[in-house]
Image (cartoon, rainbow, N blue to C red):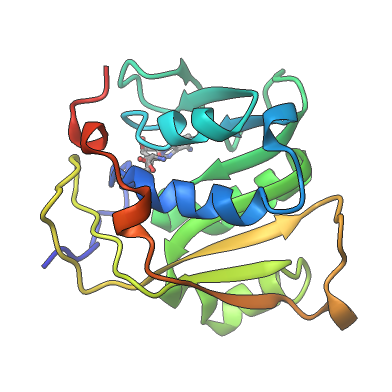
Amino acid sequence: MAQRHEAADSFDLFPTPPWATRALCEFIGVDRDLKRRRAWEPACGLGHMVRPLSEYFEMVYASDAVNYGHGAVRDFLFPGDEPAFDWIITNPPFRLAEEFAHTMIDRASEGAAILVRTAFLESVGRYDSLFSKRKPTAILQFSERVPMHKGRLEPNGSTATAYCWIVWETRPHRPCANGVPAFVWIPPCRRKLERPADYEVAA
Ligand SMILES: C[S@@+](CC[C@H](N)C(=O)[O-])C[C@H]1O[C@@H](n2cnc3c(N)ncnc32)[C@H](O)[C@@H]1O
């Protein structure tokens, strides 16, 4: 079983199975035409989110602090001169996930979404500094496990860790009732959203 315990100076490369990114796009694409939106994947790693995002969005810009050969090389937490993007979407390095969330919300013109361990939702510190101040629009909890392994995708992998997407609509189409985030279970979807080519080494 994979577990994520990373050294403080690790870049935390845990590639995301593409079907998990398609699950997010299916949700946010319900009431908007993603083919007319531009997205930024700011911690792109080996490109495993960039490919499924490109299936849904008009264009996807990819970057990472490390040069893995799959996008521009830049530290997302330092201001850059990128143009505005409608959506900023990533599976951030876990120890920097909160800083990523703030930066993504500040910079996305329509919405931001992070894929995190569900345990990220708890902690008084995070409540005080993030969730109470910048309330998510939706929390999408996977009903299936999303296996993630250090440095590689594993088609037959398993994990003891639960994951969810946290979504902030920075320009809401449909403001959530009374400012209460929607809590949505992502129904089993791996079988429907997975493609054999997902596990080929990213080109
Ligand atoms: C959990 S992996 C996710 C990779 C990719 N988003 C995916 O889902 O397959 C986290 C990524 O964050 C990158 N990273 C770590 N610190 C960063 C920073 N300050 N700015 C940009 N990328 C960073 C790592 O190099 C690594 O590729």
